[in-house]
Length: 158
Image (cartoon, rainbow, N blue to C red; front, side, top):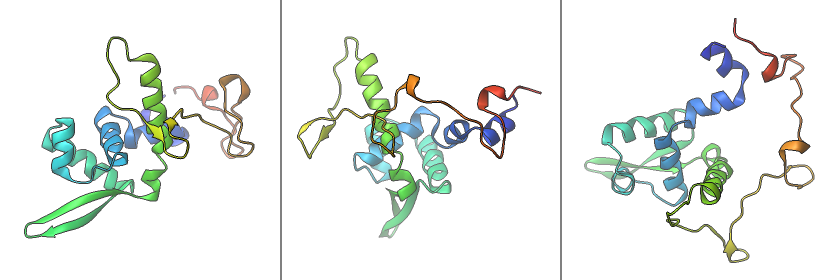
């Protein structure tokens, strides 16, 4: 399938066009941790300035972050999550939970995520927004969109 067809028909592919590389996800992670300034991302991530400039620009262009000036001379900006950006919290938490479960071999975790309401380690779970039950692979189905009339598996390369 051509990339343009994939991104046109698949919400996962379209999402990856916005946040689908490691630097972007790490910038988002730090934004959720409270990082807002360019120099703080450079120091925390060890990211090259040109790459960070590119990723921040892309996130601003897509409405995930917004720039707000915090100094006038010289003009300096901080970056804050928008509502659209805040909606990515479950994605970042799910990635962290997966990594904690499967990628900690001989490496201690750098940080714990604590749910402040109960003061326990957070255990992110994807749940049905209607009934609140956890979503499990065997308890979901993908149905064709009536407008498209195909499921992702039905779409083949030309």
